[in-house]
Image (cartoon, rainbow, N blue to C red; front, side):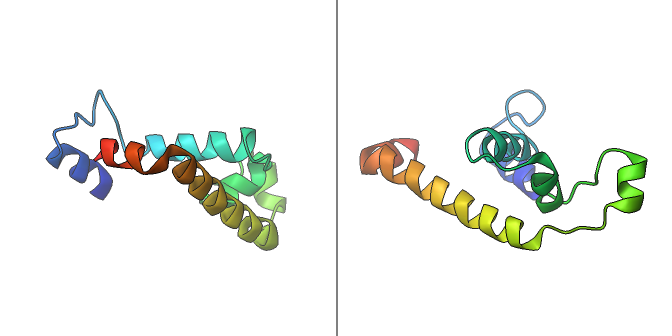
Length: 94
């Protein structure tokens, strides 16, 4: 909600243009497709439950080490994107 409120203050329509929740989908997609992490590890990190009832009943793993590695890989990936964009691209975004 805080992200959506900030978007609205910037004049962004959070019903039709962009929502904070959309960033979850971006992260979920890139963590899986670009960095190769399995969906169950990603979902645990994003605090979403295992999709099926049987899985919830028996799946008590937390994937702590995989999640720690994944978040470092995510930070490295974002740093790489930022450095590849260069300073001119960052200033244009402002």
